[in-house]
Image (cartoon, rainbow, N blue to C red; front, side, top):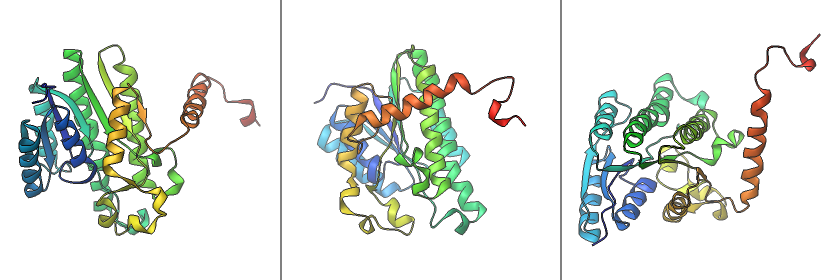
Amino acid sequence: MQEAKGTALVTGASAGIGAVYAERLARRGHDVILAARDTARLTALAERLRTTHGVGAEIVTADLTRDADVAALEARLAQDPAITLLVNNAGITLKGGLLDNDAEAITRLIALNVTAPTRLATAAARAFSARKAGAIVNIASVLAVAPELFEGAYSGTKAYLLNLSLALAAQLAESGVRVQAVLPGATRTEIWEKSGASADALPPEWVMEADVLVDAALLGLDRGEVVTIPPLADEGLWQAYDGARRALAPHLSRREVAPRYRS
């Protein structure tokens, strides 16, 4: 049996990236709390993890667009000292473009992709920093830095998660709490079919399998990376992008407008 490593809370754990995270973390010796809407899938996954890896596996049926369900997980993070890792994975995209969707669909997108992970990350950060240990993983997207490639509301939610992660990592740097943003590219999961698209329509060399993605992301977490981009071969490209962004910071707030805006 693996050495106990505390409990990992994984949202969106019934399929795709979340289910792979649950399996990999159980393999590493974590007990797991699996949160998603599909009780039957969660139950089957939890039983498999108990049998295969000998870990504790609890399921929480939750719709994270509902305030009460988010609040229940917030309370669990605040009150359960066994939880050492949060994986904010649950997310959706729109079916079609922004202009093809009504207010309800857009509100649901923001609730699941922005509001819920923000609340859960905040609850985890408070609990973990008090104990000076723990890790928060936010599943963002490469679209966070390439918004023109896809529908803007979805990519905007992923840019938000990247910003949240960067700010939390800086805030918690001396606390012993790690924060990681994972930026997948196109990954073979059910989100494609749910959005009315297909990963098979993309060039095969663009589409990563979920298990390959998660293995790379966990290696990045082990290495202490704040931002992990599994498909990016040239790390220098990210470093140049991030360096340029940081170089802007000292110049962004001034009493007077820049000379180029003076009439």
